[in-house]
Each structure stands twice: as C-alpha cells, then as structure tokens.
Length: 217
Image (cartoon, rainbow, N blue to C red):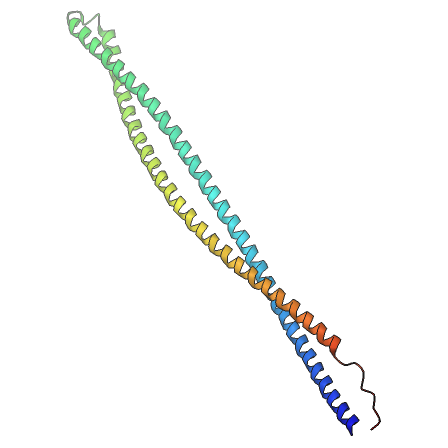
C-alpha cells in the first residue's frame, strides 16, 4: 500500500514537472519569437534612421552648395556690374567734359561754320555715344539693384534653411531616443530569455528519470 502511494505521488510529481517543462518551453518559444520581432524592429528602425540621416545630410549639403554657388554667381555679377558702372560713369564724365568743350568750340566757330562741319558731325556722334552710354549705365544700374535684391532674398533663404536644419536635427534626436529605448527593451528580453533557459535546464536536471523501486511492506 505504501509503495503504491509512493508510486502515485511520484507519478503526480513527474507529471507536474513535465507540465512545467512544457510550459517553460512554450514560454521560451514565445520569448524567442518576441525577441526576434524586437530585433527585426530594431534593425528596421536603425536602417530607417541611417537612411533618414543620410538623406537629410545630402539634402542639406545640396542646398548649401546650391546656395553658395548662387551667392558666388550673384556676387561676381554684382562686382562685374559695379566695375562696368564705374567705367561707364567715367565715360559719361569724360564725354560730358568733352561735349562741353565741343559746345564751346562750336560757339566760337559759328563764323567758320563751313570749315567746322566735320567737327560738328564728330560732336553729334560723340553726343549720340554719350546718350547710348548714359542709357546703358541706367540699364546696368537697374540690373545691379536687381542683383542686390536677389542677394537679399538668398540671405533670407539661408536663414530659412538654417531653421529647417535645426528642425531636422530635433527629429534625428527623437529617433535616436526611440532607438535607445528599443535597444534597452531588447537587452531586457535577452536577460529574460537567459533566465528562462537556465530555469528550464534546472527543471530538466531535477526531474525524476527513473521510477521508484518497490519496497517490502
């Protein structure tokens, strides 16, 4: 009677231990699947963050290079227009002085108009050149004003680009924080998985493997 009771208790204990082992194995499988899912999410998040960082850097570099090229081009055009305007202004001054001199000569040469016809033609040509030069100077002055306005617009655009870059940097910091949280969760899952494996190994080691030998009552 005592032997049957012992065998019955041993059978119950073995069944209980086997059920615990099965439960632990199921939990271990679930934990492995969850860990794999977290690792995949972590990989995707890291790849998305790397791609986002690269795209933001490339866009920022392209905007910066394009802005610098436009500024340099406009600065070169502005310098060229300024130099041309200085030259034209010198020409205007020179032509004005020469025109004044020619007008004075013409007033003194009225009595010798026939002899001074050639000089009068030259004066007319120079006056025409003076008018053309003055007109060109006006056009170039307008172009210079437009270039200066465009330079101001680009400067304002650069300020806007700097603000956009700050916003991009804030988004990157948020993604980095999310990635750090995912890494911490993954590390915790690894620890839980290790504990479950150790617990399972302990149960399998302690589980009875041989039936109890009957004793004489």
